[in-house]
Image (cartoon, rainbow, N blue to C red; front, side, top):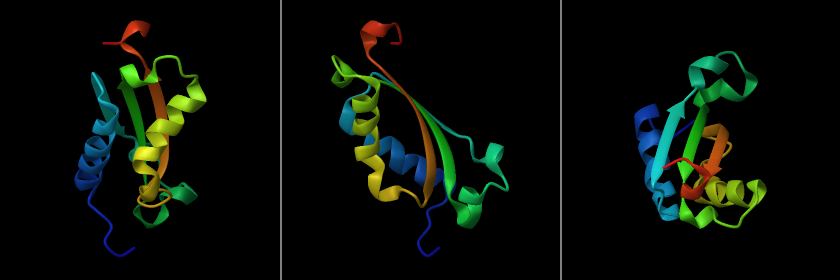
Length: 96
């Protein structure tokens, strides 16, 4: 695909966009190597896992938390991000 960022550039873009949620903790892992041969990985689309802790998730259910994360990267899906596994918690939930 034209203008596909390198894996490192994509990881930087995702991390920068997720700063909009003012995370106290943000861990982004590229799990693409676990999905080699998967139809969604064709053409360079990548699989990521994000663990994010933010006060902005306070009072929200899992679906609402995931929507906030997806809203930050929506234009990157389904390419160059094919899949995003999300663990979104608040500081009070024990992940700081």
